[in-house]
Image (cartoon, rainbow, N blue to C red):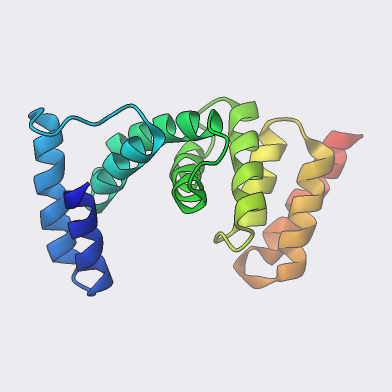
Length: 166
């Protein structure tokens, strides 16, 4: 817990190198079993965040995946930790995992934080892969209306989803 807060303190002070150094020390302690990570969602999230801060994305995804699973069993998970763990898991999936799980994860994430970068685009892709064509079309339409770099792509992707729907 203290290493997690130390790493975040460095980030808050705009010192990413200090954060990375503190996080690397924390992850080394986890690896050597000097620090034991409890099974609860908060502990799993904090360990995952340390791995992210240390630049070890694969291990962060594993910890955040376990945090999401624990948070889903909780009546009142800490919203920001839950959202950030979902974000790590959702961004990592990108066509690698189970399509239904990925779509569910993106739907939860966007419901919690519609301001997630490229939220509707990524949600639409996940829904398209899962065969949720009607939902995908709506997500792509929102992405198209938002404009930006994905506007034209979203227009065509919306057409693909409409074709899948038929």
